[in-house]
Length: 300
Image (cartoon, rainbow, N blue to C red):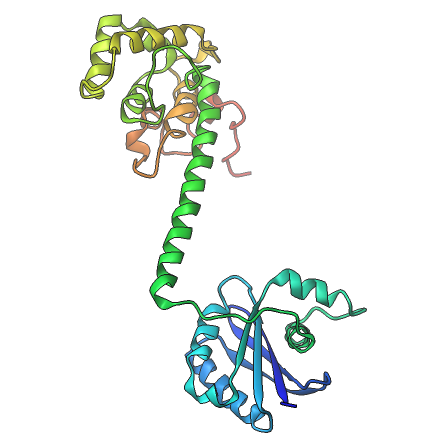
C-alpha cells in the first residue's frame, strides 16, 4: 500500500500556513511561508524534505478569494515535486466548514484551518483539481469580469430609474410614443437640459426640433416624442415649488436624473451637472437652503 503525505495549506494575503499529516491523522510537521515567489521556493524545499519517506503527495487549499491561485498553479508546474506524483485539491469552503463541524470545540486559527484541510484530504471523497489551461484562463477572467460589470450597470440603471421617477413620474414607463432607450443619447440630452417646468413651457416646435437634432434626425416622429414629454412634464409631481431656481431645486433635479443616468461611457463631474454649477465649493455655503443639511458640515 502506497504511503501518502497529506498537506493542508491555509492561504491568506500575507502568508500560507502549512500542515503535513500522515494517513492515521498524526501531524508530521508545520511551517509558514510568505505568499510570494520566495515563500513558494521555501515551500517546495520543505515539501521535498517532508515527503521523502512517502510515495505520494496530496496537497490541498481552501478556495479563499484568489490568494491560493498563484501558489497552486506554480506548485503544479514545479518539476521538483513530480517524483511524488502530487494530487492537487482546491476545496469548496463549504465542504471544509461542514467537515469542521464534526469536531467539538475546534479552534478557529490559521494553524487549525491548515490541519482541518489536511484532514479533509485524508478522509477523501473530494475531487482533485486540474490546473487551468493558460490559453483559456485569461479569457475566463475577462468574461467573468464582463458579466460582473454588466450586472453592475443593470443595478445602477435600476437605481437611476427610481430617482428618475421622483422627478419625472412615468418618464421610463410610458406607453406613448417616446425614446426607444431611456438611457440613450437623445433622452440623456433632454434630461441634462430640462426639468419638468421649463420643458412644459418650451414651444412644441422648438422642443421637437431640438429632439430631432440630438437624435441626429434618426428618431421617428420627434413631434410625437415632444408631445409625450410635455404631457409627462405636466403630470409630474412638483416638489418644493417655492424653491424653484434656488440651490435646493437645482441640486434635487441633478440628483434625481442627471447623475442617476450617467453611464460608464459618460463622464460626469461638477462642470457637467447644471445643479452643481451654481453651488458654492464651500460645503457649508447654502447649507441652510438644503433640507437636512443645515449645519451638518459646520465645526462643533
